[in-house]
Image 1: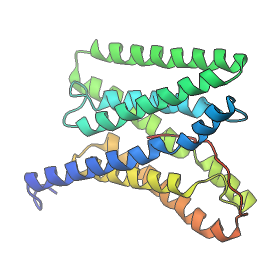
Image 2: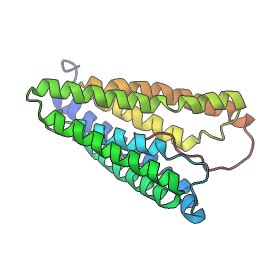
Image 3: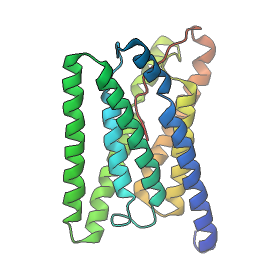
Length: 235
């Protein structure tokens, strides 16, 4: 690619893709706001689960760490988007803990402490590794694994859509934001020659296309009901 395109053009394309990914990710991050308005209004988490937000927080923290200069080179836009995502996920978790019943308060609080404890082990442990290439590979594989797991998590919802022939629990704008964000970072990773970015986001793009295809196929067959489903995963 470098023989066909100048380094300056590659850099411009990479930055454009990264900025687009940050913008589309913001749409993904704000998508659970109606759900949490409902939780605050009712002062109850009802049947909503807070586990996806715990996992999303851990994913954001690890990916933000991977983008730091002392882990990987020239991936600052990965750090910015995941840092913002971590703030959103932490806010949602705090709201959830505040408005849920006591048993869930304890469970969610324990999981939140575990997330920060695990991230502390990962970040401090990686900095103790003197071999920069091994440090990069270790955190890269971790971030890649969490991203692939995150993108794969909506498959259960896709199965529900197929079984019920309804898109009620797979909101269009959530699926669209996921597709656009993963596609943007797929291009960002390609332009930056970083497989730890383009591989998981390539998988996310394929799954995003599958979600959108299901949505349009079953949209006319869906019942005209309005609900506020809980977002299952964040990038």
